[in-house]
Image 1: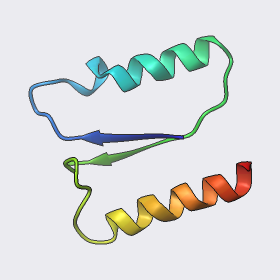
Image 2: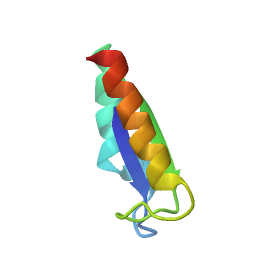
Image 3: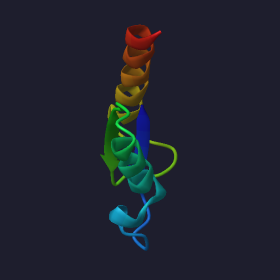
Length: 65
């Protein structure tokens, strides 16, 4: 599971390390899940965003462990 926050206007999303990691996982034929939280900073605040993230993480662990 990859969690990616889009928070830096100076760095284009396509140039982020996370995109390179995803490309490497695809090339290696590894399954993964990713979700993007646009316009969120490191604290992941606002609305139900943090709850959404933690629920996704919990569901992922319950399904895959």
